[in-house]
Length: 249
Ligand code: 3Y8
Ligand code: NAP
Image (cartoon, rainbow, N blue to C red):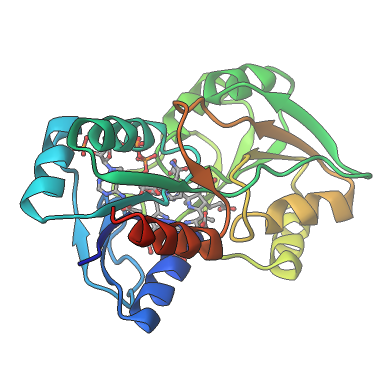
């Protein structure tokens, strides 16, 4: 009997969960517990880390999971590495559901950087008004460039005051809308946008709004992930499940 564990936290994970519920495929969607009130899902959810590769492998065995779907965000590199390792350790069939990286288009003014630290270094310039649309986990790194006025966007209100002397905090969760992000960039007189190359549709609004306004973007490339089976659509995951079932796995 097919029983999926979906590592979630993305639009695609939620879409896969909905497709599984519609097909009567048993699935559990897993959250790390980064946000106070994760979106409701069409399947049962679990929240919190597994306790490393060993913890995830134990979960797969104890819950008799037949297929592991890593549908985490492209920047959740540690979770993705653990999924590959736990799949190998247990023999549970594993696949990643990811989304293609955004590519610069005509009119884009991107400066691509390797990681968060390189983005911080790219801000070593006179004070500007910078939209830091990276969420809450990496804000502290930008304290190294305190001269800027930062527009921050968090899913939840911050526990403490972000360590940036000049900042405006917007509390909002995506998926975001191009018209609203364009209005936000204008209202906050933003000179520069810093973004992760998340891919997908939920985070792209600010990138499209920056293009429309001719604003420069510091675009952070994705971290490396291990070699793995990966597809970029829910349909491809369902097709893999059907064929895996044919092969008796
Ligand atoms: C906890 C689950 C769904 C999933 C929706 C997607 C789209 C909206 C856009 C901006 C960029 C950012 C951030 C973002 C987006 C989707 C997707 C996506 C970016 C939730 C969610 C969880 C998280 C974790 C959160 C991180 C943060 C990153 C905000 C739920 C809402 C910036 C990534 O406060 C924190 O600690 C937030 C942490 C990891 C990155 C960071 O470094 O801070 N996502 N986001 C997941 C868990 O616990 O396992 O609360 O419902 C999910 C979504 N956020 O079901 O429709 O598919 O990517 N998430 C980025 O892409 O740059 C916002 O503001 O323009
Ligand atoms: P990460 O750095 O790759 O993972 C750190 C640890 O968090 C993992 O080792 C695991 O703990 C736990 N974890 C991560 N994702 C989990 C999940 N779906 N279910 C259970 N435990 C999970 O991950 P992250 O970048 O913090 O991302 C955390 C979550 O936010 C993921 O679900 C991801 O899809 C979502 N998200 C992240 C971003 C982003 O920009 N990073 C953007 C949007 C959504 P253990 O080792 O204890 O198992």
